[in-house]
Image (tube, rainbow, N blue to C red; front, side, top):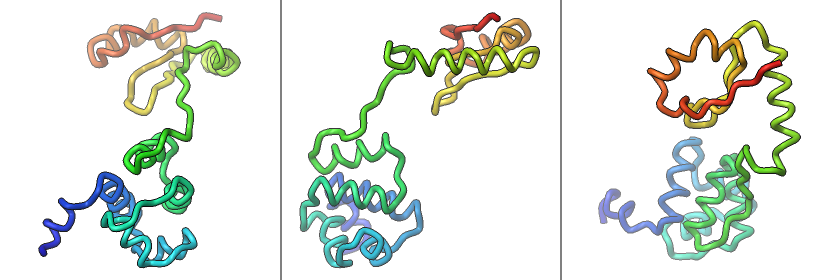
Length: 152
């Protein structure tokens, strides 16, 4: 069986595991040592010959230093529910954080400041930024039409 044939037969979890392992430059043996399991078990999990437990998925994700959002994707690929909660920035429970963000943006005056998400969408901007750069932001970033500005 060719290598490309073997990759196409991997389970969804196995594909994601191989992706993250390759991205981090970690061999199956090094990952097994870090996660506290045998190299054979990592190989079996990656090829789909063994089904990982929820705890094993979390240990592997921790060993590979995978971001929390991607750990949830790894859990879903293994058939488990998400472990890490994702909360929107505009929810009531994030209000203390929003006050801190508003304070930081106001303290950054008179210089422009932006708060962006992981996809480079502008979520908040300082008042001076909105005065000086709003036209440019509106032309270059479609998502900036929803920008909140913070006045002192």
